[in-house]
Amino acid sequence: MLAFLPISPYTNPFICYPLLFSVHFPIFLGSLLFLCHYFKTRTSIYLYLSGLFYFIALLNYEVYVVFIIIPLLLIVFNNFQTLEFAFKTSQKQDKKHFTHLFSKKTLLNSLAYIVPLVIYLICYWGFRQIYPSDYEGSSLSNNFSISKALQILINFNKTTLPGYVFFSKIDLVKNYFPLLKTHSLFFVGITLKSILILFLLHQLLIHIKPISYRKLSMGITLSFMALFLPHILLSVTEKYQMYATSFKGYVSSYWSFFAMACFICFILIGIHQYIKPTNLLKSHF
Image 1 (cartoon, rainbow, N blue to C red):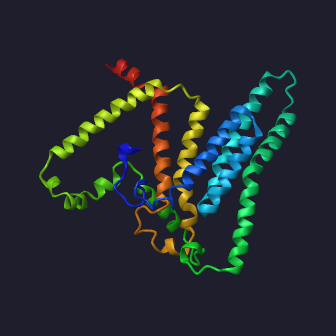
Image 2 (cartoon, rainbow, N blue to C red):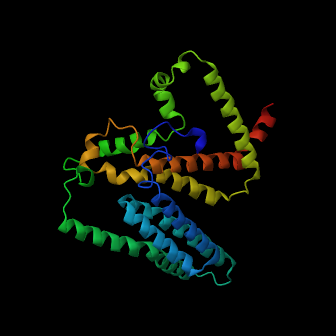
Image 3 (cartoon, rainbow, N blue to C red):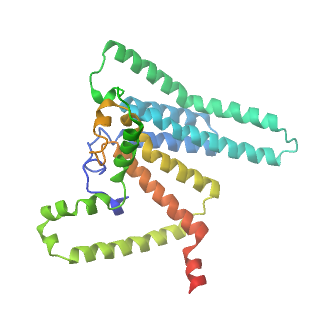
């Protein structure tokens, strides 16, 4: 992640609203870690802890309302994979029984997240009935535009692209650092650091245990979805619909930055495992 840390007040985790927008994200990641541990051990306490951590994250910021999609998809994927293996190895291959068992297990696991979400939504609705909000950033747009919503989803992710902020604001950077206007060694240094990072990344990929095609596909899908999830609620509000074209990155891009790092990592792992660049080079040269 540090290899392409953007120069931006919104996506830089070191200067982005200390504690306010950074503490609850590790709490949400902790919820996912507990869920993964539940998959390994099937000990219910880890599932309950996962739901509790998700609820704590919800209490900090309402954006986690849409983040429930991630644990629910993980539950569906894991239960299907586990029960599918049991179904194939079982002598009595009853498809109806498999479907019923899968639905029941998935629903019971999902309640650990659905119940906290319902409690939160009821409390939030009750609170707003007593204390209405006039803030445009939390009010649905009266003139909602799908095109503007899509622009928000795209623009708020631009600053998470490796080097986007740096190269798009290179003139601004040069004004802050006058030596860069004439000092070509700076760009030589960037090139050398990039080569070093690629070498270290290659060494890291060599020692990563192989990941199954299904898990890799799930990781790519979830990380791609996580790029847009933080901005969905903002994209339908009155305030951000008005600034759809002018904003390039925002506070919510903090979460997308992490998702972009995960997405790139999964893509690189997939290339390393299944395409084998070294084999391609050997076959062509």
